Image (tube, rainbow, N blue to C red; front, side, top):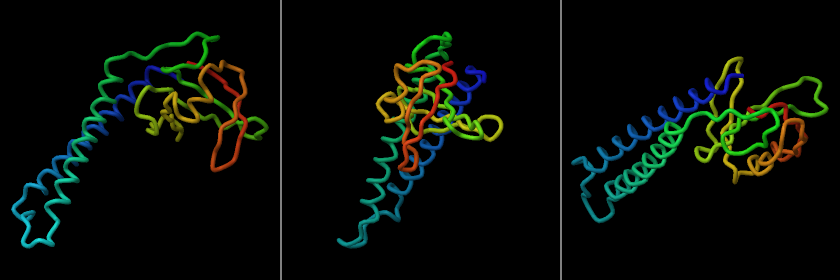
Length: 164
């Protein structure tokens, strides 16, 4: 797994998310300032609702821009074999006692938790923040450690295969 390639895919995904948020904010602004949004009577709240939506979309744009710039202004950190998991780590885990070793990939990120990026072979890398349940579980662990993660309400034991 090439961490630099994964990092570039994350930056691309964040840029796309930022562009989509800008488009949605522009659409909401157009709806809020349209002549059709002018209230026809005291019960007509379309214009007010459109302005709330435009405000929320503008806040989303700021959040997406912050996440994108945060990644853009930092390079992918490369970890040594015995390094502990911390922000910037790309971590692979495999389920213990599983007949097929299905590898899961997590990227510990200071922002954009919940984003997933598709990589080759139909796999995904999931961005998790250090304050998330998965992030809290992985922080400080090293290659070979066992961790227990909740998945669909079940606790599943995994082994950390690599920290990149």
